[in-house]
Image 1 (cartoon, helix red, strand yellow):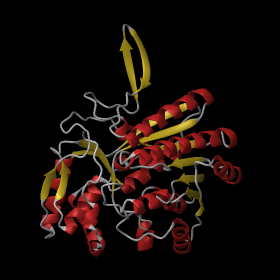
Image 2 (tube, helix red, strand yellow; image 1 turned 120 degrees about the horizontal axis):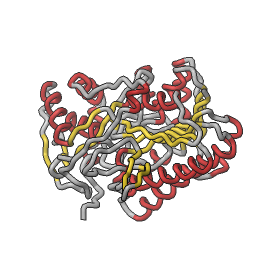
Image 3 (spheres, rainbow, N blue to C red; image 1 turned 120 degrees about the vertical axis):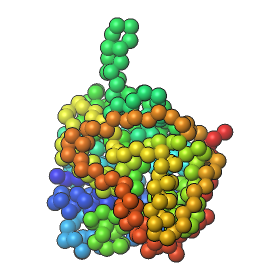
Image 4 (cartoon, rainbow, N blue to C red; image 1 turned 45 degrees about the vertical axis):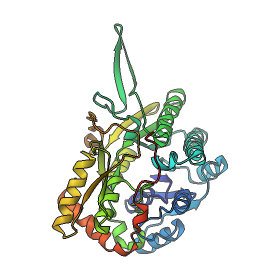
Length: 383
């Protein structure tokens, strides 16, 4: 297939490009470096040094014998979409090109405005590019489990059958996001659903939980191909933050009571899920939604897992609850369905002690680069 990856320079975008190229697909990636710029502006740089997208593409092509192509440009500009679609004509688009940080989206007005403008405009531009240039193209959109919030009922895979006053109808599962970023993802879903049912687009929306991990088979070819691994409070996901804190001997920062439960998955499983979605496209006029996770953990459970393995490695890990900077339920019911991707063939990588130990060993190689000042929360929305 001809695969277009939007947000190709990101934590997920870059490994996705290499994964599809290694499988023999024709791959083009587009990015505007906005995440790198935001990371620099907020002192949230990645742990490992990462060459820019064009340099990484060149390194991968030389080492692997494959041929990824890339373009640097702002996807809020529809003219870039016109140029890309008219020359590349993708069979599938993997859409990661959004500002992905909840804390950043609540840092201030400018950050909130940018998050809203970027995320919705890029998604809307993509929809129109598909309609205008490639109406059979399959959009694989990265959503987030954060769209659902923490309802006191089971979370279904995107849809819910409702019976009301003797009548029945199927609706998108109710969303109640806990940040502006997650709210933009809810708006994305509604926007896409309108165009799917009106213009018969084919879309798979992947409601993904927090991702952890440093490497994939492709990144292991050369350390210059590693993903943008963040451990700060702006872009660092929970497991990745805890791994770095354990190595840096900074007590693991459990927000509040630590009872917050989420669905997690390994970086390699993200690649599997996106591949399975692209290889088994939605039908015309279908918005197919999968909940993309493999295991659920509370913050306390993850902290204890990292402490156990870290202590076995002689790291002497401490855990220190701190005031929760977020407005969220700290004790709640959480039971999301996630069978769709398993039915397509997902083979999960679970968060075992061996997996944690391997990741800690990788982080130890960059111990001297850790900046502990990036770890503590700098953005609050709890009052």
